[in-house]
Image 1 (cartoon, rainbow, N blue to C red):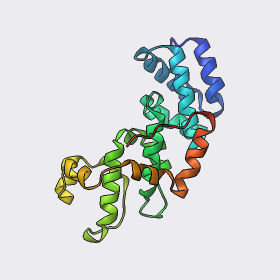
Image 2: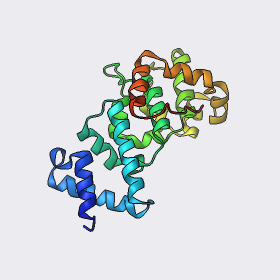
Image 3: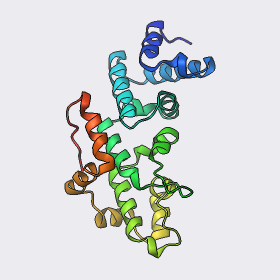
Length: 204
């Protein structure tokens, strides 16, 4: 393990690793950071991105232990655009757990963070296609698999629409973006997110 002690100390300051991780998990986290830093720019940029990442997770109510788990699963989330991530997270409120009917967006970001790399336009178009056509299919559930895991080819085979046709039929316009941001379950998230930064530039 070659990670500098100054970096370890900074990670402890920001993430409280010793409080939330076992010694083995902590070592794995250091290895992940060391690998990440080999492919990124400067340590200062890494710290800046990490602070933005922590703020994102705190905004959506993810506890530190789960945040660490999520970052370990998908380290690239550290440098992902957080404005875009938050908007995609807001779109996911319609994805439900079939057994409870409750939204599963927190479970997605904790256990499947790479799913958030799916484009916002695709997420929106699939969710609203499924919402409008529920009666034509054998289940009304809007699930993670249907929205985030099904390939474009699989989606077309099941529902008869290509990705291009789907995006054309359900375009993510600026007006729709604004309406999603202003939903009651999302508006508070935006307000909290903006507490320590300028208003994000939401792009349709």
